[in-house]
Amino acid sequence: MSILPSTIDSVCVYCGSSDAADPEWIASAATLGASLAAEGLRLVYGGGGVGLMGACARAAHAGGGRVLGVMPEFLMKREIVLGDVETVVVTSMHERKIAMFEAADAFAVLPGAIGTLEEAVELLSWRRLGLHAKPIVFFNPRDFWRPLFDLFDRFIAARLLPAEFSHCWSAVDRIEAVIPSLRAMPPGPPVPSLMPEVA
Image 1 (cartoon, rainbow, N blue to C red):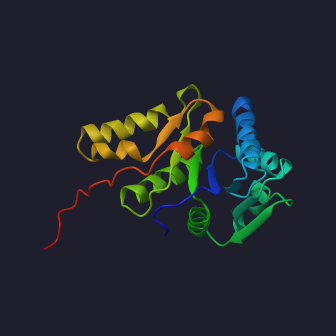
Image 2 (image 1 turned 45 degrees about the horizontal axis):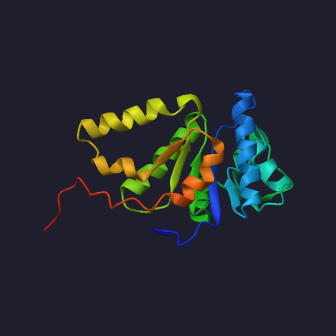
């Protein structure tokens, strides 16, 4: 795994795959996709054509942007692969997450459910372990992610995480702020390990 990108060329977007999601959030995902294309940034995403992920990918492609989807074989019918964009088919969810991580220089987390939460938490865990220092920005409309942020604060208050963990990510409430925030976010300071050193 690369530790720190020198520049941002590819942005991985984690988001929901439900067509029943809030139409405003689906529209925001499309706005982000179009913005990535306009900025010359490649979109890396889960490969599906549904929900926020599909809206983001279609808008990026329509804007002439580069798009890379990563789709596990068993989800191809459920999440409806977009035929117009480059898609890599993998064998498992684990392989999907590693491939998306390796292909991206930065990460945007949009509203989603359990799958998006899993991806975001694993990404933050890797950051916590010092495996990478790539920028991470949450799009937080109407405080969607506030319960998760409150849980992080609870971990820190309980001394289960160091306070420096809060520097590993940022949050914005406007979709137009995602890309500028990714570009402006410096690598966080090293997060000290809570494990005792072995002599």
